[in-house]
Image (cartoon, rainbow, N blue to C red; front, side):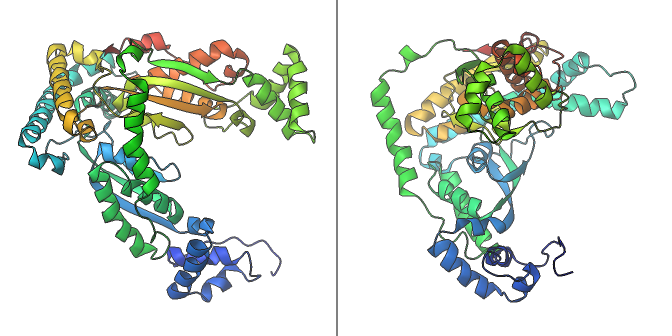
Length: 477
């Protein structure tokens, strides 16, 4: 028994004791059970103070996992919360739930500015009036666009179309609406996240940090104790916007009718990098030599290697890690609702711009077919006017009034392995939101034209191309 493989769960221990139990194995020959028996909460706290806080051994804190429920926070605040990639989130879905006008965040900063407070509330009221009014007529249109399929039960059909009509109506929701979410992460991630939240320009996010920290401390008293506002983060968020404005001057000369998805940077030798990675992985040669060999391979030799590496890849299979070597960067201008969904892809590197109404907005075709086009445009016009007025004094808080329909610009960088996943789950999924499916299919088409040898292994065939998907919405700027 002494030298046999043993695998077991450490149950009934606090997160701090678990963290120390795992940490001590590096210097103790004892089993984890034996180590845990000798630990108390007090001993564990002292250990963490010395090694995690004092000596910076942060990996110890990764064994202390905390799950926290966060309720009644705005969609804008949730963006800040979910900016920590090494965590798990589940939140109220705008694709399956109808939102309530009574659950909206009203910035406290407006209380001293009665005109702005009134403008904000009236605009939200106008948005919700059309949101509620649109539900039945849009439902009717969606039922016509997505008829019941052969063999499909009434219940299954209703579930299938429900997300589609809610997807359309959600364009009218402001970023101020409340949602609930659950967050699970280790203590090291929470400490980093809290530091960012404490340093955020939005008072709501800083308030969330103040409320969440004691909750985290009640679970792990030591490991998030020193999460505080960070001078560097605060200073850069205050100073960089001014410096950038001075550097650019007027932004108008840089703006124009941009593409919704544009490939702005990529490795020109994507296929060679992947091939070199494969040659390197399954040999003992240096990467430079593998890369030189990859460049000399003829087309038949390349196809043979790719076939062995990627042929037969199914939708839920994870391709080889060698596909992480090349990168692609896309400049995307899509509706805020689609961005909100896309940001959940954890392996992406996202560089976002502040939310604005200045890029225009998207109008779903189903809204037009429901006879609500003019009312929809009027709501967007009023929202734009309110945004511009509020932004003069409150540039950060103005983001709350913008809707899920408004265009959001962001850079999206991903490796080829993530691109396979992205194209499948965000492009081909027939149940996905139409605008992010457009982004997924557009990315597929762009890369397929440049690197057909690799993209033929993406595990699906599109039922509709991006031009077909484009018929479902219009971009107005």
